Image 1 (cartoon, rainbow, N blue to C red):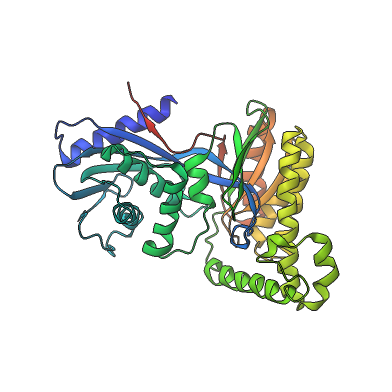
Image 2: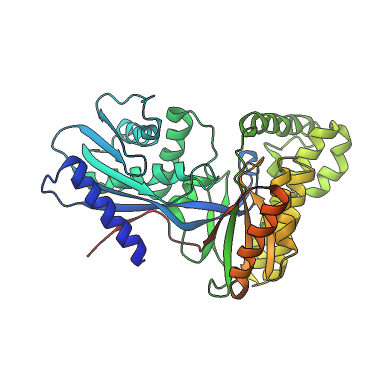
Length: 395
């Protein structure tokens, strides 16, 4: 917490240094990144996910303006961008600002009394690692708009606005999980989310003084993600179309039980059947994971994490050599309960549940072994589950 407040003061100082101090109170908010513990490629199939908000976040400081202008400063990029609320368009020169522009545009279109402001932000969510720095920036922007404008907004509505901004303004066809966990996460809990109904439950995690969430970045750019993502999405949709002939009521793969899939899978092309099998079994693993965590069965939860990786590797085929090396090393290490790739795949990160007593040894082992086998020095982040987006008070 002390580090968070120190960084928040730094962002406030940068705000005043760049834009001057207009005498108004400086408001502060933070919104975290996330890691998904289990439930991969299920969100766009109306399925289940189990992410946590992590203790790496975007911090934003702002002062209101008397006009309708918004002036932004990205501390980490040392870059500025400005626009008027009455004419919000995309900025090709400062694409980072589009996440903020899109959220403010939709808030205004939906009748919320947004105000002009000077705002600065900084974050320690690693960029390009699949930990949702974009969703954190969107949620920080929306919450700041509410704080500056002094208007209440339902948190789930803000989540929907943030997702719509990324889909329709920024142009990234993401699911709703990232914004949801950044907005509604809770310290020491995972969030079990039904991506169809948006019903959610907070699930207690094993005590964070006994276990740590360790995120390991392969440092491999995920260059194939867009085309592979779209292809797999089409394959899942094709599977639903074919299965609907035998299961007329289904809308998505989340409606197909493992037993029904076993009866009818032979009607599907082999690759389509593989993709469907992953999604259907992954949804079941999420439900089993929730039961395991509620029963404090950490060993079972770790086993399910490992099974998830095998399914993503062999059935959905979205892993890569580096992810597999990292998971293999982790699974053979003392004190590791579970390890799997997390995110879209073809690079990015793994997530590991590790006993706290051996976490330093694990980090050293993983760095050494992965470096030797992959020829790349990884980045490793020791994390804990934190609260979702909230206002910060420095006093």
